[in-house]
Image 1 (cartoon, rainbow, N blue to C red):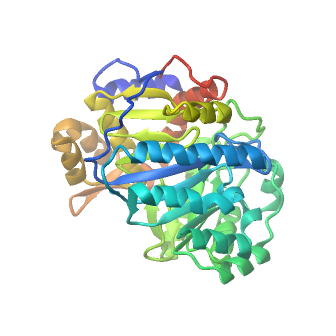
Image 2 (image 1 turned 30 degrees about the vertical axis):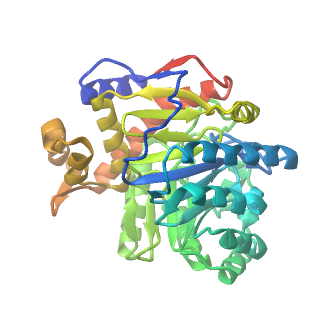
Image 3 (image 1 turned 135 degrees about the horizontal axis):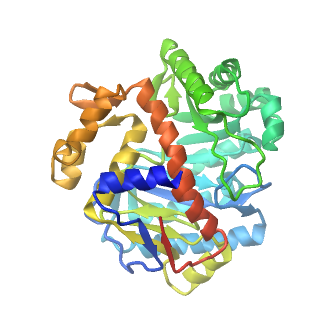
Length: 417
């Protein structure tokens, strides 16, 4: 798989130079002049550890959680104070882990954020189904949360068993969601599980909207090498048939597709922490993307706390982008929305998209992967599938390797991808 990603990287960056991450960082981050800046906060605590989950997480302990959040708030102030006054940002997202386990301290975190940033598009937070209770939802709403995303994975008991999860009580979910309203209620499902059928996925989506969701996300299952999951991914042909059928179904129902694997039944229901031109990340394993660099915080919770207590940023690794590398990163995550606006690319880089990638765009159109619509490049079903397919290569060749190392080393000296 690394051959595919290495070849793609070399072609698109016009260089054989790998992505080089070094154990270094800037003490002052250059985000003051950036537009379209998003914020992400990582809460790594879980009541139980799911064997398929690749994200940075540890078992919840009250004392450790409090010490972590104290450090997290200090990091927010350290970075936020680099900008005079309040910096306008698009959004704030809490991921994990299970952020709702820290519901009593979310207000403290958001207050720290509000001292330095003005959020224009709301606050999102990820939830485990066990946390979807009226009293928890009310705490979240009072803290300022406007969007929630519930990690269902599947309503089917056969897949809950495979994933090591207990069955979801749909009636309890429906009751709680009817008592406390949010702008967006998203539900996440895993796509391409073994022998998963069109009806399995269709029924999950139907149940989600019936229970109270106005947005669903269908994420592809990826078999990370460092997880203990025994689940095997679906073969390519079956995966494409399933994705095409469920996409057709959602479009027939009139659901709006706002990213590669998300659909909504309400105009303003959106949930995505990924499609931002730039973002600041706070907490262990959180990433920060700026104009010319990408940095990653340490994955180790105790090392994160210690670093903050030394009045140092908890950065573990940083890559300094070449211009072409930054363009590839921009296009890869912009394409996640299924659309690429040439005007946005030119505004960001100061050069026309066609001048840099005219041949690749022409080829994508000839292969039926993209089409033009009012000057915007839009993915076809075929293009969306191959984004899915390539994202799997990218994840296993790059993210799997990096996260596998960072789970073992708090501050590795160097990683080449």
